[in-house]
Length: 355
Image (cartoon, rainbow, N blue to C red; front, side):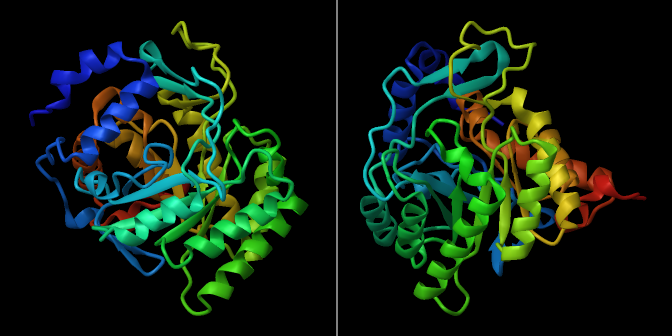
């Protein structure tokens, strides 16, 4: 399968990463990125939260922060797209440079700081868009807010009628104090507040509400979060965000930049957290596996560890958006090779004996 991205990759690689990203967004908005030869398979279809997913491979938050290219990315073959992170008020984020490629490690470091156009602008774009698939919204708090929980409540109130699902992001390493919201008692209060807010807008069949967690959690933290998830009845967990750790085998010159590391070096760490969450929740809560996915084998490892859905972003930096087709094709091959007739049968299969 010919990949047109291969023609422009060398040029994009010469640009500042954030400039390159802005150009890609602009090109997608203008309709100048062709849709790839599409691969879909009945093996990959499933229903989650009452919603039909054509395939389980989604676009993670961070790429389309402002809901500018929702349909173009769905047309690239993603099973769903997550917009954001969105904060109540517009936010410029941290000082540049704040995005770094680690080409030798197939990784990215960012310290963007929730730069986005703000809740009203993003919600208005989504309301005006005839969406061609499932779209979630990832919610955060403003950097200078005095009421973090209030910010999440505002986001839930505004987007409950707009989004197919909502994500409470308390795991970015680039907003001071944000990860402290993962502590058990704080998290319990936060989730109870946003779950109630959701019902205020849509009392019956409200959009699913998910929690996005960090990969840098202690075993005790993971246990606490699993207990809170079960107690509150949230609809899902996204595992994981980027890491503040730096594996010793990183070789790129940018490896020691501050911020969150994503991409291939995150695969094992994020999959471990995912696997532990699956065990602790006994498979009762749908999990979204994200972190280091760049191949069908990576996606399959997440599914077998307990993911119902998966997401990627950093792999596009090195392979382009059409790479999702290769991942879906290879994922289907892995399912067939192991004798599964649907992807649902493979979820969590690493935790039990299979034929």
